[in-house]
Image (cartoon, rainbow, N blue to C red; front, side, top):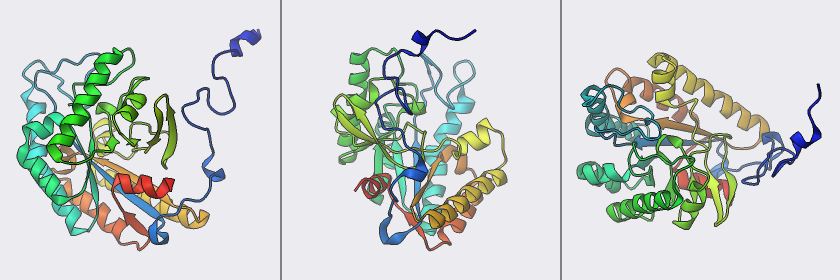
Length: 306
């Protein structure tokens, strides 16, 4: 039985993508990307600084890596808190040891609750992007637009005031958006967002308020996804990151076009004493190659879109 031809008659039906948010394109057909000094791979290390409320509401869904048992879920709450008090300092030491430049995705509620951590991150001078209000305050389809607009504004205005920085990047809690989120970000002065993971390089994204850059932050290479969701070992985590880097490095050389390695890491995961050596192993391997450009997210966006 054949489908009625009207089945294929719907808004935005077109070649490539059935929407007009961004243009469909094949990686092989794009103009070459050039990183500073002819480097092959841009290394973006995104450190998630998150706050998980103990009295989690989980509406309309539980946050990624949130509380799982009945209140009070102290087992998971204190592990997340451990990352912001202990694990983060092991990460900072590793970054400095291998001279890499991290970006910190900080939630505004965490910045309010952890002033000592806020001061430390601000004093380092690395780029800070807004990671929303907290992990139990998601952006989602069906959310009241006025409610979401207030949440976006509260998150960005609060973090800008606390850090003294003009925050230009955004990562939603759990990478969750509504159809309105990108436009609300533009209206609040955000230049790039990291929720869309459908590519490996930055791309232009259209909204009703103007254009924003989508900077894909890989989930496949995220520490939490590999070790917590996929139940792979710490050694397998390191192997997968190194394999990805080696492939991208060679691909960049073969195509004469830059590539990006985006690593999403969490202090409560990689900051553990039995895991930090695997992060150091990864950083030692990557920085042992001369064609690597370690940079903040905003600098990578600027270089890719110039």
